[in-house]
Image 1: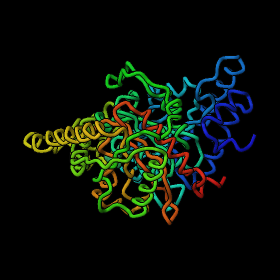
Image 2 (image 1 turned 120 degrees about the horizontal axis):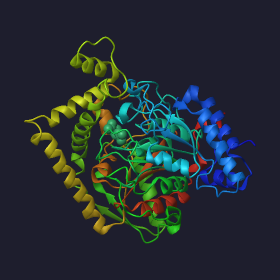
Image 3 (image 1 turned 90 degrees about the vertical axis):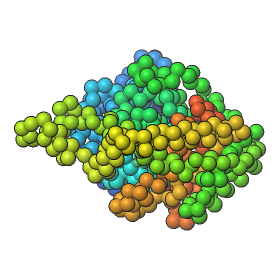
Image 4 (image 1 turned 120 degrees about the vertical axis):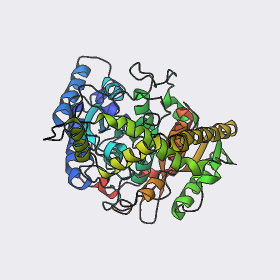
Length: 491
Ligand code: GLN
């Protein structure tokens, strides 16, 4: 059967469940497409061909044996290389873990498998998820399927590019300060960061533990909801995963926009934002209004402190989390060191890239005695203020709408030498991680250069339902799926 790649999860699931296509045929079609695109796209760190075909054959055998097909039966899914997939390297985009092969699946990966999904491959990313362009990968530079000379965003750039180019219908990413939503915006697909604690972090290699969260990319909001449904929920293996019950996200999609109160924060439409993005997001706001939602201007007064607070807290946590890569316990070990301290130093000097080293140094500095109160403690206080800004706003509104990123996808190298410029691309996304809130980016238009523009919808803690509900309503009006990237049309 031809034409199996490029379909949505719902289509694939029903083809496989009804026997109109086998999971193996679906898997082959996506592997072929991924392989054909890879020389230009470079989205994958590894394609797990044999394993995926074996998994797909198992799905087919179960169906033949009359067992009920899972919610993701035969659906190929790509997984960011920071999440553990049993038996496959989890490099995290780093030389230091180049040959690290986990012996277990991350909980979210295990849940995908249990639902019948087929793990097709591991996707490229910024080293240890530090970055906004995937240029910090120690291995290759992933291209944006809309313009091959531009970045796909990051740090989950490989996952976003793979979905946008139709190599897979869905993928998992992780988001510490925007790493799902920003690449989703740059690649013109929906991508969601759930509430902190909604999805287990077990098997997610830690960058900043109080901010990290895994979540889905899909071609449609419905597909994002389908994957979230499977990966969400409490996990005894992650003490920060939340006991909250998981509602029916597909049912939530039918709610429509009517009656919703939408907050529009003045601080997110400030100077410095690209004009085309401003216009496109505002036109989406008018559509929401036409659908019966009420817009309300709100203020999130501490927004301006979010980037500094994030880059203090995230680097502090990273410096502590990354201490484990010492050449003794995990991954790369420098050759020839005769003593312990030189072994540590050489291993880390060889194994980490420039951005990771910068963050370890920043984080070590803000935690060191004498500076702790001035930086880390201040950062934590600002974090509380930012969370309260949102709490106050959510007394008046149900969801908040903002642009996802101040610019569309930029060119390779454009920000690579200027860490501060790179950090500022997270200006609209880091606040949600600091406050632990759920958010989705959906494509809302194209620039004149045909680059996608993302709209961010933010919800109350654990209210992914309302976020998805509005996202689905807007998606139906925006009809962005009529556009697809030039690469999606090519074999
Ligand atoms: N770009 C941000 C950073 O570099 C966010 C990364 C992320 O969400 N993993 O820290």
